[in-house]
Length: 532
Ligand code: GDP
Image 1: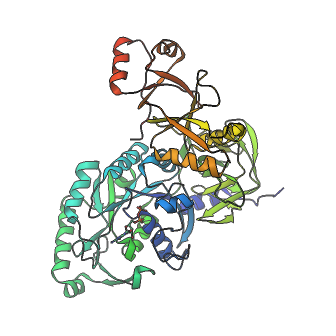
Image 2: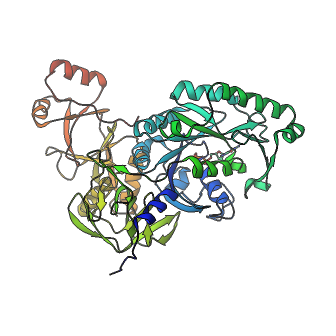
Image 3: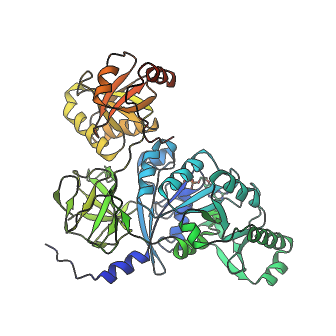
């Protein structure tokens, strides 16, 4: 038994205050992996971009894990990376870039205190950017917007601000303003000090860019018209009320904006400074009843991600927990709220890409990976002393459905175990019915790429290859027992029981659903949260 050292309330409060826990989110290809690596580089958590995997190429950065991710060049899994910057402890929680994994992204966003939204300067707000802005708004998450790839020809800076304002409803309040149009990125006007920060490229962008500060007068001498334009545009923003206001940012009314070229490491330092100065620290979190549990209450946290097979050598199972209150000591025995059972945290680790270090203690805002945590499911709460339950994670409405069959019928045990495991992890939704039987569960996904992950994992992690049979449904509605009886007579509709206990009625087309509602207005057919 490890006896934790005495920790005072003051320690917890000051550690919580030092934390900045956030996710970088964007439409695919906006530069999330590149920026993540640039942040690590600037915080001296790594020495050289691309160094972690020993690759010169930009693929395979620290936060990319699975072989499949690298093959596709997308992040499927969530990694939490912790590093220090000055007196601040930064927890960067990775999110999948592809829209097919929107449920996973949603869960990660429930575990962070702020989001950094990357926008590709030449593309403006893309489909996934808009969806993510919307999720942040729903969750009340403050968003810092980073306009990336300013080294490439793209849109006009003021036009981009107008687009953000018009399409997201957030007022963009730039902290930096580019000197030089997109494609001619010389530096930024630091709108708070008025200084010019000039960037100089380093060969290949592999090390932190050189930054020099100039007074406005010297900036004009150095950059001429480019500086004059930048300062005029900055004054215009001031007149329009687009200066940073901390309270309005935290209230989700405004979004501070920074201009970057992640690949050249331009603007990354300013982003780190902004995270330290303006992003919220770990704060009291509301439980399922809406009561806010102070950060200095006894330990509590919730599971936002469960993952297996991350380390091929040990077929392990990791539950990622966001610490909400108190201090976590490795070895402490906490209570699993869902079962009321004690849970021993002997094996706790913090992640750094593929590297792991043992987590001896963790504070509010931190993420710990609990190993061999087979009983923990996504959304579960853990606590010490005073019971608490945090709100459950919503399951999105599945839009793609396939029946899973074991390719080799003698492997039914492995098949069952694998499907259950992937269900626990939230990789896929699992539904069953008496009619179809236990050996033919229906898998529901928000995006079809989830099925590929299931096939891959079933074969490689569970030794039970599967065959998937497509079903013609597109829509799911929540129903109840009574309505299910009636719907059971309709051959065009199928009712299945999802593993969370929800009865889902599946329809092939919106038209079919409309007809059913018209013919049977008395039926319960409720909308589910949607991920698209
Ligand atoms: P992700 O899909 O959002 O993780 O994007 P990546 O980080 O993989 O970047 C997508 C592509 O954009 C890669 O080819 C990067 O090298 C490139 N890229 C990222 N940031 C910049 C940038 O600031 N300027 C330019 N020109 N290219 C960039």
